[in-house]
Length: 274
Image (tube, rainbow, N blue to C red; front, side, top):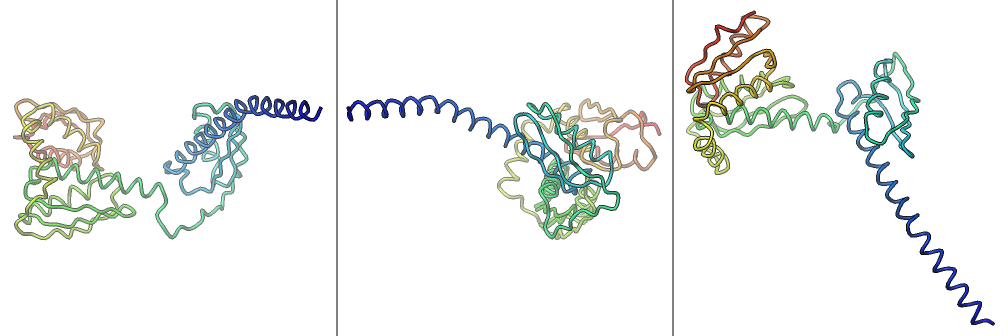
């Protein structure tokens, strides 16, 4: 009798374990999905210039996102809701965010996630513009960005190259200041720079399509130039710009930026109208 009871209990335990396995797996999968959704919503808030400084908390359960915290304006509250609804799998949002007109975001002693991403993006843009420059062969430049302030260190083979590097960095989107510490001296590009420059020379420098792409990208990276309103075409190294600019200063900057790109022989800008 005792043996029968033991076998019965063992069988029951095995049956419960077998049944619980899929349930546990489903629960774990749901938890992972909800954590991923919370992270996606929070990351979007952190990168959004209108929400990054706000104190917003996010929790997700069974396709429902619950938002809480404080913002300064109704539009920020509504934006937070729309962002959450845009995440795959979120079907409902309970918006408990409080609008407080005199709300002051908490002070931060260190750069936040968004600032770090912004600085990394600025550094990449500046490095790219310098690499595409005709003066790249005479530069060994390190670029560091903190809170929008760019610091250039290394060597330039002339004062003109140093000044140009400073201007290219200064008109990059998001840059608030430039500390140009480049030293005018004979510059020797690093092995990595040499390899990348060689790749450009052998594969892309003589390509009109490459020049067009880099001119457009330079405009996109640069402030004070509306790249989306400027058309760029290249034929045999001759770049033609057309479209609309807001001022003569913007036109002059567009021409200077285009002329600086490696492989450009001359720039025609009669089609740029203000």
